[in-house]
Image (cartoon, rainbow, N blue to C red; front, side, top):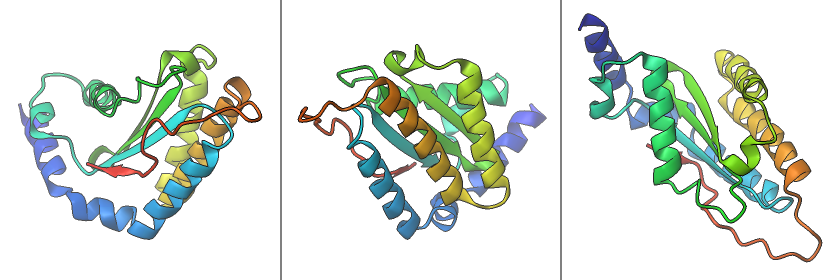
Length: 173
């Protein structure tokens, strides 16, 4: 009970202002441009979702914090329709600032090309940059690595149509 109460307080302490200080508007604009540029070279879709704290319903769950965070990322993956791309190659990068947590959720089309250890490697490199307070650099590194994988496995053929299936702007929750 005490553990859940402390989690509740931590998540209520962080708010949208925390996100806007951590990832200011100029950084969000550069990230949007990087996603947009990346998607010119492959058929995948990349979304970034940054959240200060979990919604109240998640905070009272009787589960380990890691499991709750993963569940939240999976829920957002569905809610944002990242799973609903033509080639099943959408990727969600989820940041939860209250827990300093990072999740990457990828659709089945891309997941069959990477092992869980490869995804964890990307997360570890992001986490290292975040520890240094370099959020833009960490997200840029993740975008570059995910883009390289998408270009390798889902390259955009010359002259092929590439509709933008999902918005490119990072979302703040």
